[in-house]
Length: 457
Image 1: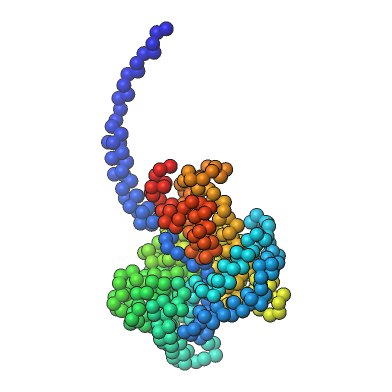
Image 2: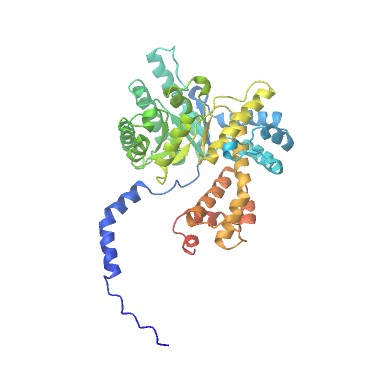
């Protein structure tokens, strides 16, 4: 049998030379993509933002809100069985998988964890509302200015004194001021300027600014975002703040912010016009719904118009480092016992729906909503953490086959899921280590592209 002939050696261009040419042609594109899409958000994201009218905010507001929430919790959910009964009826909607929101086996842990959360850290993010929450319609314009200035000064004095050194302060806080529309621009700029100037003079200003999240509402154009960026730069210079110390959230509560006059997705342009200062896109349920012509009775977080707007937001924010927040429900858990429980069930179902769609934050409007916020959030994470941990262990080769063939991008998502669960208090570090065989440092490494874990695959 004759041996096969030896093929002639392949003669062709040097791959390194070809690569150099491709690199040169794509250098500008690579740099642009790295600038525009730096990756997912980093650091802790609060699970909620509690909006309170400015005239209700005082030095002890966080403790006061926590006490109201805890009293409602203890009255209506005295034990795990009561919690499971109340929230079992909040069954996860059929399009999200169906089933009880709180599994009986998880009820004891959720009951203990939520109660501890309400005692220790009832508010993750507080927004002091000088816009919709401070209207003063019947007060003369001159008096409104004095009133708002006085409230700004009072709040800053009380909070700076009480929160300096971290005492009683939530991890995140901020103000929502008047929009940059002509009718509210003067008042909004005045309030924001006064707040920043007050913070700049605080003894513990760096700590206060670290969690500071001003909110720019009712955005309708790229020019408004650019004006906000320039205002932040001017205030940093005038108040002696470090460059880029001021960042902000953009509220998506107008149809114009989703669809520009030329038909483009304006929200994507808003993000990039912020020059890296935008930290979040927040959906405004009721302003957006009303502007779309939806009757008040049907304005809701799960309306098809809301789903469309939020889907566009989600695509626009992907890879930009900008976090997403859903809006609120104005159906409050107040009144008699059944009214409270019905309000909680509705709120919990909407929260679970948002979480399943990748919106890990939402707005709350009443202290009692903190109960359903944490019950629904903890139940969401605890239902899926065991499977997520098993898949992480299988991916890293430290556990048995979990029945999935996960790729690095999915492993990062699994690790991010577990990190979020830890950050909000839904699970303990020991639970993660026991199930996944990894600690927090391992999870953090997995969430970052190019880690040793990823390269070893």
